[in-house]
Image (tube, rainbow, N blue to C red; front, side):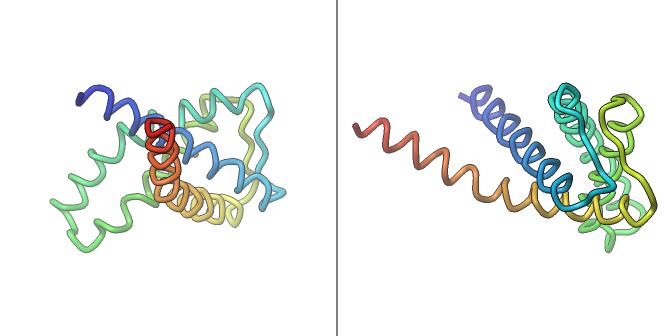
Length: 130
């Protein structure tokens, strides 16, 4: 059903964001997430992205259509910024770290979002056949 597909998409989106945040904290020493705050950070980050992305895409299409491809990066930055404001467990220090964190979270989450559905669907199909 449509609701189940939507819940699967949201779950994959959350898992991809979790992977993006983990990869970024491993790569950047100036970005940290405490263990207890990690789950909250992933939830806040995902909600902000899901809510902000359509809004920012609409603004980009109306104002400057060429910026449409950059909306995901802006959404990732906004997600990190709001998550940092709301959650005390996420720390990002310095402009360079903010820029790199935005790029790394976006790229890692993008790769994870491309790979996870194939892995999860493949696993589900294999289980149904067995």
